[in-house]
Image 1 (cartoon, rainbow, N blue to C red):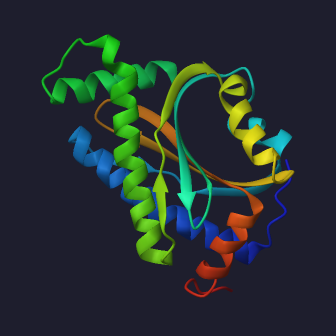
Image 2: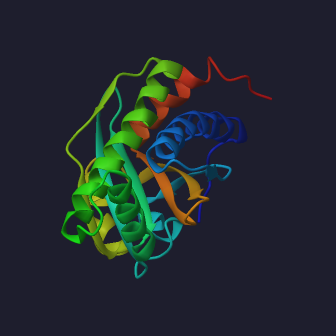
Length: 204
């Protein structure tokens, strides 16, 4: 796996992910009425074929909601869960909302959760960097990660051979439900983020 970002650039992007991810997890904490722990963000600039390994390999079955980003920058916010954790989260949020047992609504529940979390993440990044973005309609699916990511990587591959990906793991303590947030940008958007963030984050 190739991490070709200079250290100061990686530090900047980790700070951006910290800010966006922390706001998203605050939103999840409010939804779940529980404490949510997050990991230290990981940042890598990768060849497109390396992204699959970064998210756990092509054959790992996961549930994922995909939120395209449009505006000053383009890319995707991805929320991924192990299949069982996705069902547990959807069931738990439905139970809190008085909809216990509606399994047929799990996909739309996960998409709505993703909408709230991604909106919080993008709003935090906007406040920090002044970058204006909106999220397009999300798509949710459960499949092997390779099948899910193929279309995303094909979209980025029309413009570049590389992609910037940041990852942050999270776990809701009350139920032990965990997952990952990924921000995936093409190189042009990466340079915009680095240029603006570099003026705000002190470098060593």
